[in-house]
Length: 315
Image (cartoon, rainbow, N blue to C red; front, top):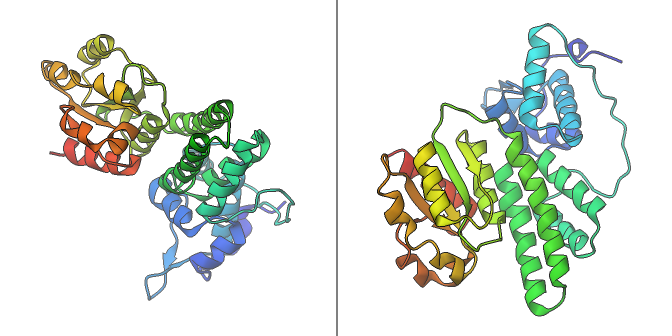
């Protein structure tokens, strides 16, 4: 095997060429560079990135570890530590491997195939598709362009009677399991503001709240995901103990949304008082609820909610 250090370090490939050669989408390559310092490519006179054979080999090695299930943050840390000791990984041979999942596919195709796998209870294909999404897309794109359209399709199929309740629950558990793995893969930074996330009392649908939790932890916040059906008294008492900067809750039904009515007033009595934000399907189906629940409606999507919360925290 050849050490990656032995490969040419002459920058000559565009990011598009690198994407074709590695099977990694350009947006993911740029995210790995920006967030995890996996690479530091040189720039041509036109300011476009240029990559060497050595950097392509490094990307292939990183992708192979991520495809095996290792979080990108850990892969990047391992790579940095090894290279600081002068230990470069070995180059991975470029050998095409057959498989049901095609690499580098657009998010809409992954979403459609994921829906078909889930409604047919095909866990193996669903797992392959989700691993592909995680290795080739940034988290926001996975949630917004793959999981959300898939969940919408599943909800519509259930409402039409095309799939059983058991199938809807099965799909939700598969997706929630992968999302929890992604959430836990991000480091917990003790020096950043603490944010509590979860679901209103009686609310059992956790995926929306978990999306927000994962995005915020990816952005570097210290996030605790408290899960479904949070009793108001217990939540307020816990907030008094840990003093979070914000408490974020999700509600999918009118009944669970009603459980949020007193939380803003009760949290406001704490010293210091945390921001209270909320969202979820209940506030999309019934927009009038937003004026009846004190606090801040954070937005219609997980990404929008995170962006609005970050703005509130920066004030």
